[in-house]
Image (cartoon, rainbow, N blue to C red):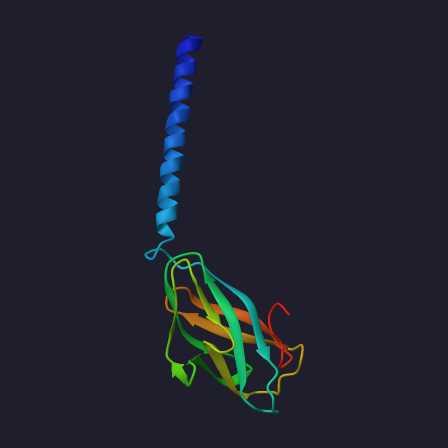
Length: 158
């Protein structure tokens, strides 16, 4: 084989490899859409210290999804007898059975909006404790989160 035909073969091979790489990238981007598997991470979790001993607590966090859509279907904790999901509006608060986590989006549980209500503590939480929340998703399954107990007046980023 001459050096000229070797170079031509090498260039053709490099071009083919580049075309395949671009095609593979397009397939990877498509799989992250609404039909792909969810890729969930949890950020900024916290539980404000309940205002009264043994009283109800609230839980806040952000679920980020870099993949396909999912649904938070339940939450539990070894530290509490009951954890329920709620949505707040300007005039009311209602319990919900599930919360959507959109493809490529977030589910924000924050003060004044969607949040968790934690009741029937097994032991009174104290500042600095880290409590376990077990988030159950329809597709991603169980995600365990360690959540710090913060002062009642805590606001993330402050």
